[in-house]
Length: 338
Image (cartoon, rainbow, N blue to C red; front, side):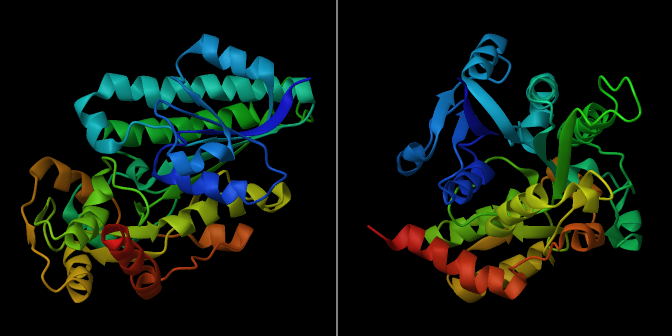
């Protein structure tokens, strides 16, 4: 008899750790996690954890033989900065591994006679505005606008959204009345900021890097100019968005890919808030042409009205609460405790 589980990939990452903590609060959730790296010691009791590569088909086949998968939260990915350096590896990790998991979910759905839920965090990187003037003109971008990403990571995310939609709507659909193969749902996150885990190579990580450096008394040179602006969200809201979307009645959903966001700030505005909390912080600006160009291709803000209407999304943390109640006190504590 296989054990029924919720399967989380990329569980050792920033979003993965926060999601694992949240799902583990419900004792009825039996969790299976997977990552190339071990879980932090304080999280190891929360799940059955497997260290391994999602491209290892023998390992995935063994897991399927041991576990009945109720839902998949597919968080594992090669992030934008590294993906630009190693685009072929990014395609393998971000696309081919996703395709294998979608096939597993489809097989499991067929065996169970009901769809396996597949939750896929996408990214603002799926957008691609051509220049700063266009970005200034289109202030709040909707899901179906400017889907011309300029990075390998963005291309990967956009294509995987389409793969998920295909597997949900068309894969093995021999009759119009046949139920969906899988229940695919995706959120496009803005830049994410966590107080509990360190930044891990995302192009939007100048925001958390700035705060963490200031808390440690380390000088920080921001790799975008002061006026550069994108939307952000703190990690508790990111996890909450995933869980809200997963719990939403399917009949309420009018689409499969949803924007979610909280607040939009320029790099200078982030610096101002950091200096208010850490007056001695040394934060300067030394733009990196390539990384800044990626930020310039992302919208200054995104329209999340569909998520608000369909599944009652609203961030719990606006910009003031994000800094005063979550980021500043938690990051201060991180670097002052023994």
